[in-house]
Amino acid sequence: MTGEKMAGKLIYLDNASATRLDERVLEAMRPYLFDTYAVATSEFGYSQGIEARETLDEAREALANALGAAPEEFIFTSGSTESSNIALKGVALALSKKKGKHIIVSKIEDFPVLHSAQALEKQGFQVTYLDVDGEGFVDIDRLRDSITNETILVSIQHANQEIGTIQDIEAVGGICREKEVLFHTDATHTFTRVPLDMKKIAVDLVTVSAHTIHGPKGTGGLCIRQGTQIAKWVDGGFQEFNLRAGLENIAGAVGFAKAVGLVTPKETKRLQEMRDHLIDRMLAEIPHSTLNGHRRKRLPHNANITFHFVEGESMTLHLDMRGFAVSTGSACFSRSLEASHVITGIGGDHERAHGSIRFTLGRYNTMEDVDAVVRALAEIVEELRNISPLGKNEEKEEA
Amino acid sequence: MKFPYTDIVLEHFRHPRNVGKIENPDGKATEGSPACGDMVSVYIKVDPKTNTIADVKFESYGCASNIATGSIITELAKGKTLDEAKNITWKEASEALGGLPKIKAHCSVLAVEGLRSAIQNYEERHGLVKEKKPTTVEVVRQRLRKVINPLTGLNVVRTNLVQDIKVKDGTVRVLVDLPRDHQFAHTIKDEILEKIEPLWDVKEVVVEFTE
Image (cartoon, rainbow over all chains, first blue to last red):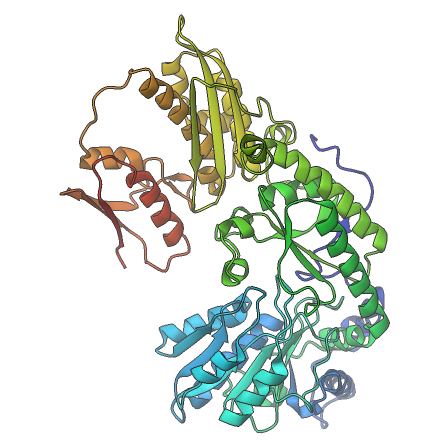
C-alpha cells in the first residue's frame, strides 16, 4: 500500500450524495423487517397486513405533515429520482392532449428533472431551459415571459445539489398560480433543513428523499397537491392512491418518517455554523479560491469552492488518501467526462469547474472535521500548485 | 482502502519526479485538452553531441493520471536519443505505471504528446524539420490516432469510430460513427478539432455524426 492512509476515522463530507444511517432510524425500521413484514392489506385483510397498513398510514401522515400537506397528498417512491420522473412524466401524460406540450425547467436542475425533460423533448415536448445568474438564481421575470398558453409545468428546484443556491420558490409559485401552470420543485436537498410549507407556498408537486437526512436509501416521496392533474405511469397494482404501483416499502417509510423526526432546528443551525466556518477559513487561508453560489442564500450544509490552477480529481484523491471524502465538478471525476453543468450553467468556464470541490456536512461531522479538512486542503493545494504550470509560476514569470 | 489506480500510479502521483521548469530550455511544449481541461508542459535540454535528452522536466494542471504519466514519461525519456524518446508510446508509459484506467487515456496521453511536441519544438528551432507537407487524408488519419475513444481507451481510428475523412480546398470533414447526443460526442468532437485545426494549410474542420 502506497498511501500512508491515516489509520484514523473517515471524515465524510459528501452528505449531499448519501448519508450515514442513524441508528435510531434502523431501530425504528427493524420490526418491519423481521416481525411485521407482511404486505399492507386493506382493512379486511389479516392482522399483520392491517398492522402494516396502519404503520404505513402513520408514516405517510408524518411525512405529509412535514410539508404542510394532507396524508392523501403524499405518495412513497423509491427515491427522488423516481419522484421527479413521476412528476414530470405524469403531468406530461395527463396534460399534453388537454393543454399543451411545453415544459420549463432551470438549466442547473439535478439529472432526474433535467434528463426527464430531455426524454420528453425526444417525445415531441418543447422544453425551455432557463438560464441562471452567476450565483445560480433563476430570473423570475424571464420565467414569467417564458410561460405560454401551451405551458403545462414549471420545474424549478428548491436548492441546488452542487452549489447550494436556494431559489425563491415562493415567487416562482406565485407566477405559476397566476398563470395557472403546475409547479414542481425538487426539494431533495432542502427537505427538513429549509422550510417548505405547501399551505404557504403555491407549489403543486414536491420531490423529497430519505437518503439526504440519515434515513434509508431507496425511499423517497412525492407530495401532490389535491386536484393536481397527473397520470399514473408506473403501472401494476393500486398502491399509493393508484398513482404508483409496487409493493409498499413499510420499513423504508417508517425509517423516512423517523429520520424526519430526528432533524431539529438546533442541528440545522449547527450545520450552518460549520458551513460558515469552513467557507470563511478556506477563502481566508487558501489564496486564489472562489466560493460558488451565494454566500447566505445557500443550503445550510453546503460549501462549494473553486481552488484555481489545480484540478479537482487530484485534490479529491489526495484528500481520500488522507481520509476525507468530498466531491468535485471536474470533468476528470465524472463518468461522462463532462464538467459540472451547474458550474458551467452559472457562467463559470471549464477552469472553474476543473478546480471545484463540494463539501456537504451532516449529523456526524464536527467543527474539528472542518478544521482538519481546511488544514489538509491548504497543504494539498500548495503541493499541486507547485506542480502546476499555472498560478504561482505564472505570477513569478510576470514579476 | 480502495483507490482507482495502481500503487505505482499513486506513488508517482504523490511524489512526482522531475517537476518544474528548465531555465532556457532547448525545447518546450504545452499540450492541453479542452475536453478534459487538463494541461501539461514539458521542457527538455538536449546534449547536441550525442543527440540525447540531457534533462527533462514537466508541469501538470491535471488529474492524477495526468500527473503520474508526466512523471513516468520524464523518467523514461531521460538519457534517450531524440528518436528513441519520440517513439515512447502511451502504452509504454501506461505499462510502466502498472496500467491506467481506459477512461483516463485521454488525460494521460497529453504527457506523451507533450514530450513529442517538445522534441519537435527543438527540431524546428534547430532546423531539423523537413519541409511542410500538405494535409492529406492520411495526415489527418495519423493525427486522429491521438484522439482517444473514452469508452475503450483506444484511439478513434483503431476502433473504427472515424468512418470517413475528406480533405478538399483546406476543409477537412470527419464523419464519426456515433449519435450526436452520445455522452462522448462532444468530447470526441472537441479533441478532433484540437488535433486538426492547427495544421498549417487547414482552414476549416467539420465534424459530423452518423445519427
